[in-house]
Image (cartoon, rainbow, N blue to C red; front, side):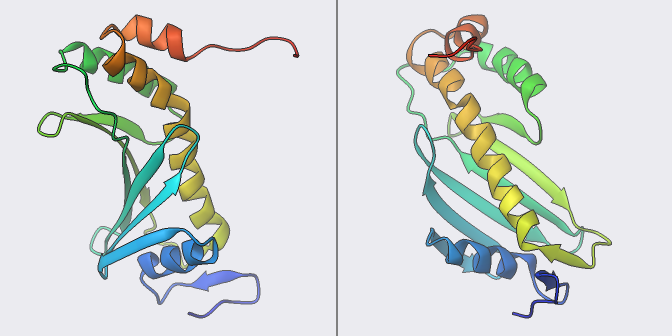
Length: 167
């Protein structure tokens, strides 16, 4: 792996190699099953997150996905779609989605690197920060929805609140 003078990573590498190099420095567990895919697991605020990075060399897009792995107490009702819509309005980058087959919530984030000659370590760290921030922020909402009451408004109000003042 070659670094330029400005701590930039040269563009002749697979971005997954660059991501692997960055997470290796932080001693995060990872698994690499193909040259274009990398999985990591790390501890977030509420739970451990399984994050997958996939590189599509033809479209030059890095796709990042994270399964929130919240177990359900009962079958998920159609209100999940309303909750996703409400949550996704609040997400800064990326989006949450529901997989009917596995009845799981996923966070997805795609980055186009087309035309970018260099990818910095700071950019890679930002990719991971976005996933961590959004999953930590909205994990409680989905937890309340799945464990307490499958009502989108209730889940949002119970889990997302702004604090005022100082303790």
